[in-house]
Length: 582
Image 1 (cartoon, rainbow, N blue to C red):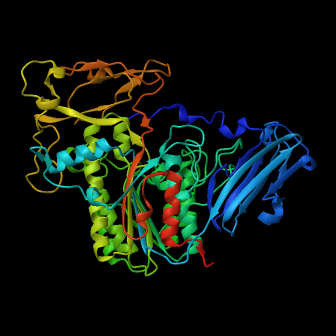
Image 2 (cartoon, helix red, strand yellow):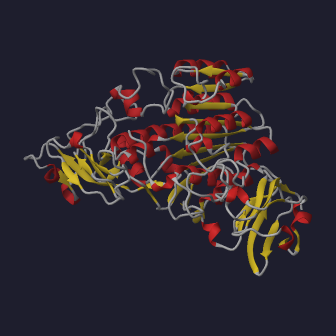
């Protein structure tokens, strides 16, 4: 599948720069007591340091923050001055009013610094994310995997019975829209940021790595506790969601550097695809531009290496005090439908890739040996990647696979009730179950084969072997799902079983995309004129609220509407990461 092309690739006019001064952390930021962050004030013009006044709660900022900031007269040739103070923290909870002044122009922002209770509520936290998760994914997975008779579901998904629920806002520092990097980063830092960013505020700094940093959950756990950390995904380990647990860059595309950031934090379990960024440039297939060998580095740091599902299970069972690195593909792993049934994609090269539920079980086997508890992040990335491709069959099949991983986590929690489980997506997609399409209806017009209202009836998926997956996706009467936003493409009304769907392709040498004519001659195919800009080649994210579900100690704080950055605070409270005794 062609890489998604969107306007988020460039950082244009960031909102903070519209003010006379941009202050980071932003106005209304919530900051964990004791957590590390960078303080930065950007001025739109070159100023003299002696003309600048920065007060926090009426006192000189350096008295409150404990150190004087670096003055940058002309930052990166921007014709603007900056004050920058890195790696600071505020220990006392409360409201902090930051006032900046240069000449006659002022700016005021307010921060809330918060602590946590002294009593730790949860020993373990399992944070499970289906990338791009929308209600349509859940509904379709339930119908396909469990069936529906006379209007009632014939079974329940593992996510259906999680006790607590909240709606989650996913908008960004620079846009009401979002991407997987800054939304997951909000969960993992408690701070909003710009599209594409991980663990930083988007500022005017020229280098991707010079933007104001905020501490990630992985770093906070390492700083405060003796807990273990696990990160597992079926995407590349450098992809946005797994990267957000440890990373600091304004561009999610800094994949070689993200490997280095994983190495700095050293999660005890690290499993997924993306081995091409671990290997030195001399190794065939490497995507690094240097001779650093991070497979060797991780091994030297005590990690056992698994490259197949079989090796993973063996190492997890034999695990004692070591760490586990699983690298199962040079790029993204294959979709669950391709691994289990179709044997497409790269399955011929990597025939023994583990499913997300299997990785979850292996991670739990390793991490649960730590008496101080653990934090485990579990991602299924194909609920998003296949939704971008308008390939809903693969997306929903992977939703079923994700739910099976949730079932593994819930089974663990049955015997470990001090475990909080959080299930959520980072953002949604505009995907909905519309009805059914029935091949047995007469005629060649596929639109006439779609059933809505009473004519939809029920699909005829089967699970004769009882493994929780449909025996096949190309049944004669199947779900019909549509996307709300899309490029020009040919709708075939059929599963794309040869390979994942490629809806649009570049028009000649232009940067505009047109419907992929490879599907033009499929009987009954219909050209759908897109509703996205022509420079976009795939479905885009939606801005709809996410639905978060949770169970376990501390999960009762999830309720009503919350910002994605608020989720971090609930986790911090459950783990007592900033205990207050007064």
